[in-house]
Image (cartoon, rainbow, N blue to C red; front, side):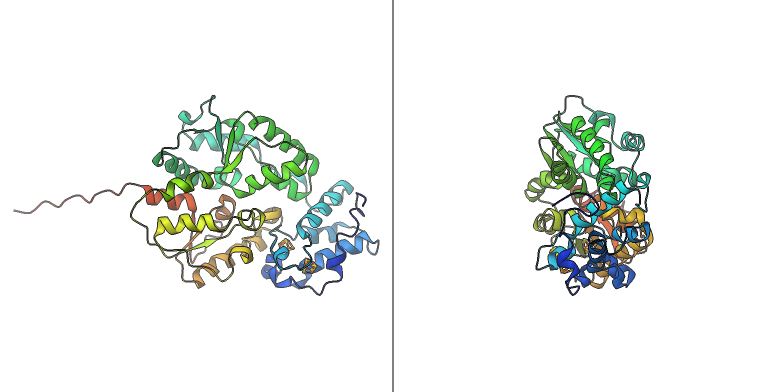
Length: 374
Ligand code: SF4
Ligand code: SF4
């Protein structure tokens, strides 16, 4: 195998000769209604470039950005083809050739904005220099869902979790959008920056499965050592929630499997167990769930490159929850919840799992007694 625009030879071969067997899995096909964007079509164009049948151009490159990296086609593929890695690597090769259709700027989030957003939502008492564990809220929670960050802190408080602090060093983007956008040098730089800032902590606690996947898997793949322990806030609170007794919420809710938490990291049961304990009812399963769950459209930088189409993917998830008879769709990913909520067009309401737990733990106010009239 060789590297470069015609490199890693053979990675497109199986798809190029496949009768589009994963066609129905792709959120881009579902959102556009067009087979032009099927996994097969994208991989076939990669094959055509790799084998010198067509030149790489900005126009063809656009096709390779029509992928959320959701791994849904992987679930359907009998040959274990890694479509996501092949397409994302191809993006990086096109960036190197100077024919990528999107500039680096759309995949970047200014650190200063995140530091400011964090200091507006996390009280000063959490900024403890000697803390051994630090919260890594991630871009979507800090910029779009400050209420979620408050709810996470409230859950920690209610469950007496006192060892997790906050720091300006943890208010930065993990670099996933740069990776997905094909800007690998910038991603490497960001990965090293995040890693060296957080290495002194024993534990980094993430809110977004996207950040967790990036630090655990993409940093390692890029040769960057990750912070010693990266774990999700959900993993920390789940055992404590399961040991806590409160009146169940009793809502009609569905659970949306995040691609990063589910297909990328294999966690399907824990969020369902937590929801069932808190709500008193197991979530109403949507038509597409667990390994077959529909992507909300936020991954792979698709929310940045194709906001309208990725919004259609979000709407269809919400519609699916409504079709299942749910009033609320719960997400354990701040990235998915933020993207689903950005549709804001119902019918089911979007709720972060931590906000659900916070609502359950909140002490009920006793109703004021009415005075008897004399
Ligand atoms: S990923 Fe698998 S099922 Fe999909 S087009 Fe490629 S070979 Fe066929
Ligand atoms: S990884 Fe997801 S978005 Fe990308 S081609 Fe496969 S199904 Fe489509």
